[in-house]
Image 1 (tube, rainbow, N blue to C red):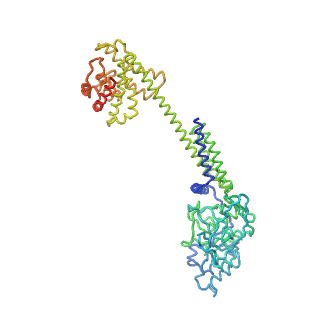
Image 2: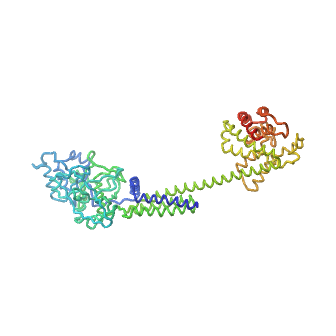
Length: 634
């Protein structure tokens, strides 16, 4: 039954975690994104191909050429130089939304915008623009954008949502420039809610038409790709076909980026060096060139899983390189189902292990399984480009182990408490049995033993308020002391009846024989310990203290050992007063019973000689309660 309970407690967290993996609530998705970042940092990175370079309007370019924005004819000259150097495509990560502020182009009467437009007409240039998504923003208006034909094929379940983002407007370059270029792409690459850029859209919709991103447009132009199609598998996965390239995207046509490293992993060329012919032609020939700005005050940076200051133009370069190398990171269409199934299988295996072999084996098994899951996740990401999150299996294993450990602890504690109750019951049975034995020999001795149980409790509770005894006399020890108090005279079963039941005073020899009862009582307990094989039992240790030392005196004149002061155990000091009080006030074995007042005075007179002074002070405070117990028993 206990194994079954532990097993169920291990399976339930696995099922709940599997439900989280399938449902993917917002908090779970956020944690999963962080797991993705850890895997990205753990997996070895792939170096960028030699097909993409970045031309940077950097600090040196501004100091050499002049402040930004440059005259459009100068930008046109930069584009012309790159084209002359054999660039396959020049993609501008720059928006020219306003007319040039300079009057005329250098060396000509034409406007700078006209000069740049003339350069763009020679082709192989992709202009950038930004899409807007705010409700109520005007449509593209005078923007000249370049849509693509994108048939959507549903290879799996049909969905009502469009498999890409729907924009409401655009911030674009001047129409004359866009018409001259003949090609363009959007620059949008919004980070996730935690500020980390993990994915970028490759296509988006605006006013019912589909548009490509800057990187996709640049790669299509450089490779001559003409045919595109979007194959939707389900609500979580799709494939963008670009000629023969199959690009895995999510439900919004986002591509998971495989970053090549931290910032400036791609070759950076200063725009000033291009303008001044300081760059060998071979560095640019045949390559896709992204032109952007990283100079202070002009750059746009984002945080990535590998870097916190990643230039926007390098994001576009990374997308293009992913498309060219085709080493995409993808999620399986069955990713959530696979994670949920893994959680359940591992959870069942762990539950069976803990139920059968225990928590220690479960901890070891969990550690091995978690390490294995994470190692497989890193290997799949690095070698296959497949992201399978280890979050759900890890959460399922850890939560399952925690719940099972708690359940097992609760079960074991219940067993321990049950065993404790059984032990207490056995102790009480032992006390009552021995007490009954003394009653058989002497009824008055039995009644005396029962009264001392109540006296001992009242006196010990009062003594526990004394600073010197507070730590020792815990509620548990007080309970134990009172329950064992009736045993203090069990040694009298070994005293002959002629002495035990003799009326009047005892002779010297009889008194010597009577004083053997503490040793006889201790021997009874010692023999019981030896026969049962019990050692260092706290209950029996206190029982021996009570039986063997309740006739010791504070000044060392007691028996059987002649212990002095604090050599006498606390239990023996308490029983000394309890025994004398009841003997003086309730019995007539050796003398006529004394009144309560005389008994109290007798004990007070023994302070510091017969009794521990602190115990006497506690006795004085509870004496009225002891008198009530005495009258009730008569």
